[in-house]
Length: 296
Image (cartoon, rainbow, N blue to C red; front, side):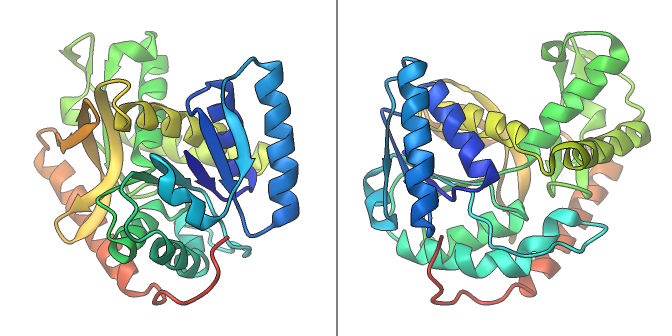
């Protein structure tokens, strides 16, 4: 397994992979050699102390061709000045690097999980440039996890008793599937506006306290990896093709094979999803074309 990008998310994710002993071998790839050497040494210490079987090594992009899965967490250095649609703030900066990496990984036959924001746009860019058959964006599954946590808190139950999805664009334009949400299999009235407000406040709370979200995306990646590698079956909300755009919809994994399982939508939910698709369609046309930049 390989991870591209050794920043905040990459470091946290790599530690999670090693602690969970998910891969037998983990390659860490970044354009900053000192950072890779330091992180690899730190992760080797973790593996030994935690009795993990994962062997951690520094790697190059070409080495990733032999992996069964690659997680893309790269982030180009930029200052995000966006006050709304914060996740889209990195689109112009991150798209060229994603395109370059995708071009280098043409022919890769494993699973690619894109974590880099704006994830719906970056997953599409990676898939279109690389031609890889199994590319998923991590985003809506984190939104869905937060939704279930918040709704469980309102209802005074454990989150595992809540079944419901958040789809569409990861972030401010997320669509709550309130009409099909259940607790213990029974329909539940969702105060949609209150939940949406809380969903938007939660990442802001995390950013204000620790700089940026890191642990939640790691949990989403670990859960998705287990399903995409055929280690477990179940549903993950992932960014995948939806018409002529990419956005988050539920995907049901069975023995590593994923099929969409979009729930029945109310007219208003369908309208919101179409609006999210329209916004992503327009935003993608404004991305810079892939260049020959060296990927991190």
